[in-house]
Length: 372
Image 1 (cartoon, rainbow, N blue to C red):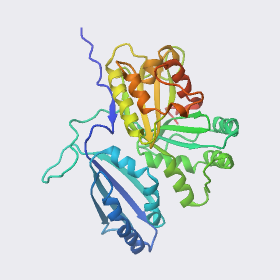
Image 2 (cartoon, one colour; image 1 turned 180 degrees about the horizontal axis):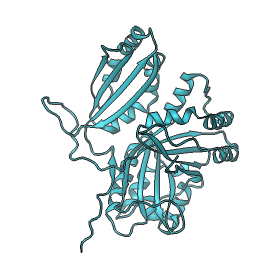
Image 3 (spheres, rainbow, N blue to C red; image 1 turned 90 degrees about the horizontal axis):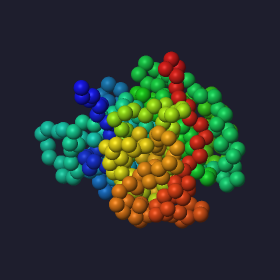
Image 4 (tube, rainbow, N blue to C red; image 1 turned 90 degrees about the vertical axis):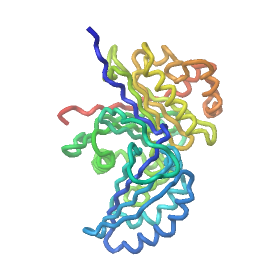
C-alpha cells in the first residue's frame, strides 16, 4: 500500500511575481483634506521607487473617514526594501498623524484579466499554507543590560491567546543575540488584529514599560506616534517559510526543538542572503533525513534571522542547521555574510564555529493552549 504524504508547506517572497498591497485606513475625524494633501506631496517620490508599478487612493462613498490605498510592485523584495527603509518612515509621518487605525494586506498576483502590466510576472501556482501567519520584531538594548532584559522578557505572564472567533495567538518565541532581541509570533487569522490585541494586554504593557529604560532607541508608549515609529522600525517580516512533509512536533524529548540563527549580512546583501537561505531551505525540505523540519527566514535590511525546528541536537549537523548543504554553498554564504559582526569572527568554512556564533539564546517559548 502506498502512503501519500501531504504537500509540503512553502511560502516565499522570492518567486518573482508581482505584489499587490492593499491598505485600509480609518482617519481621525476632520483630517480628510490633510491626509489627501500629505498623499499628494509624497506620491511622486513613491512612484520613483524601484519596483513600483502603480497605486490608487480611494475614499469610501459610504464613510468618508475610510480610505483605501492600493499599490502594485514588480516583486515583493523591492517593496519590502522600500517599506522597511528610513526614507519610507519619514515619508509616511504626515500621513500617520491623520490615521486612527490601519490594516495592510499583501498579495502576489496569481491570475489577471483585461490588462497588460509591464514589470514582474504572475505567480505560477497556488501555494499551500498551514493556516499560520508569521512575523517578528527586533530591537537592541543598551550594552550591559542584556541579563536584566532577558529576565524581564522571560518572566512575563502570557496574554490571552484568543482574540476573537477567527484570530488567535498560537506561539510566541523570544531570542537574544548579544544585545539584539528577536520576538517571533505565529498567529492564526488576522496578524494586525492579533498584534493590537497583545499590545493592549496589561501584562504585556507592563513588560514593555519595564524594558523601556534599557532600549537603545527611545520610545514613549503613551505617544501613539512614538510607539508607531518604534514598532515600524522593529518589524522583521517573514520572507520565506518551508516545512517538510511531516509536520514539526512540539518541543519535547525526542521531538523537534526551536532555534534561531542570526545572520548579519554584508552591507547591501541582506536580500541576497535571505534569498540564498530560502533556496537552501527549499532544497533541504525535499531531501530525506534532514534534521531541519521547518525553516522561516525573516529579513530587514542587512539583518537576517532564520527560525528552524530541528529534530535532535542543533550542533549534530551544523551544515544542515546553517543551510549550506551542497557544493560551494559555504563559499556563497561567506560572500554574503559579514563575518566581522561576530566575536570572534567565524566563516562558513568552519560550520561548527559559525553555528556557535550565529546561534541565538532562547529566552522564552510560549505555546497557546487549545482552549485559551
